[in-house]
Image (cartoon, rainbow, N blue to C red; front, side, top):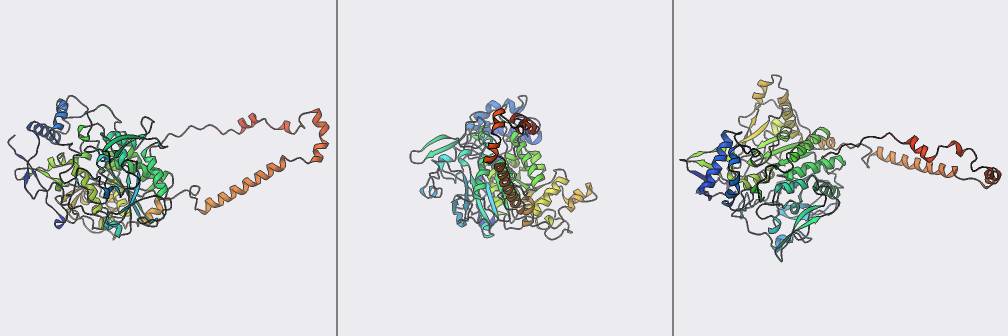
Length: 605
């Protein structure tokens, strides 16, 4: 009660070239909510920080249960919604002729789902086939980005908003939107964005999330349509043959990357788009497609359990939904990708959305089998008490939740082509050149797949306890001043394991991306139409089939002289005795019927 809560703006990093949204030149900004709302938030914050089990969304016998009826009142004091309200620097609409011309085909009035390839200067073109195009070369390494939920504010479709290769308005100021893909393009990457924004434009994240996995009612998938001329937004239904959006994704990528022959594929998914990236990757591997990735990057992977008012949902529901299905299914996908196809997974988190159960499910099984890095984007804004920072409050900061949740998107893409952030304290030597400990001290976009694999192997060896936490550089969007701490560190793990087996895993020379691509895309010869074994078997089958047809034709042919010779016998009997020795069709069917086998249970990934 005696402390004065202030909002301190973050410092601008990168030599002033990047200006995070919410920065205000170091001056304090008053928080525009009522005193009652502030008291409610402080109650929840302190309760969660100091007594993590003192409330539960599913239990009415808790402090949160007592204020549950006040949630809607609290939401009314906050403009828009905490998670998705537009920043002051964001325009009220993006529906300009210039923007609409970038997406031909009538979007957002008509459905536009699929990959767009990007070029220098944020140029783009829609992928139409698997051949070479202006911004796509099937011989080059390829990265595909999957965006997340688009229902924030009043929905992205209504204002013609789409994520592109520039820093988003939630994170960067309107006048300064750094290009994020330039270093990737300079290094010879194909950069593609898989757009599913009209499907993801739902009031409740849960409704968008379930489309990734199945058609819940079996009557198609709803999508938003917006007519710019009339300003009318309507809900349409997609009724084409697709069991889920993941099936739609796998079909589409199999088509537009059907001739891919590059050395590397990487999928990057943000928020609930991480689920789509993981499941689509699993389907592509099961189909033996060359477009299947060998590296999966999950940025702020979000899993909902409840419909909350911060997601435009009209009411708070704590007893309904799919429970933890999406979280467990995604973890199973990642586990299967690792165990069967050697696909490595890295996770980067930056907000309370993925770290606190008050906002979503914490997917511990997924964290335990992946490389896990925690960013602290305090440039979005931070809480201080007097002259002292409140680090714990920053970790559960919902006042800048939209910026913090989105910040990891530019942070990851901008880290490509930059040295991996150093560790504090510095790790001892002894590692070989090219190893994870030498060239990938903190996982980032610049690390190669072999180095990420070594860290994944160490994560398995330490039973999921490994993670990186940002120590310095949290007040700038640039990555050149970032440092991290590793938990458990090498020294700490050496004390627990005198043999040092876990640490040795990250000291070996890592395999190249080309070597790993060959390992992750081992296709059985009977599924690889280009293999010599497959072609030999196909020719053999064709010859055998022709031979069978020839024998069948000869056996059914009767010369005229023989038919004349058997005329009397045919009149006396309908059979010459040979046919009587054959089993009837029903007997043949029963005799040669293969034993029944139980159907295999369906897999999610």
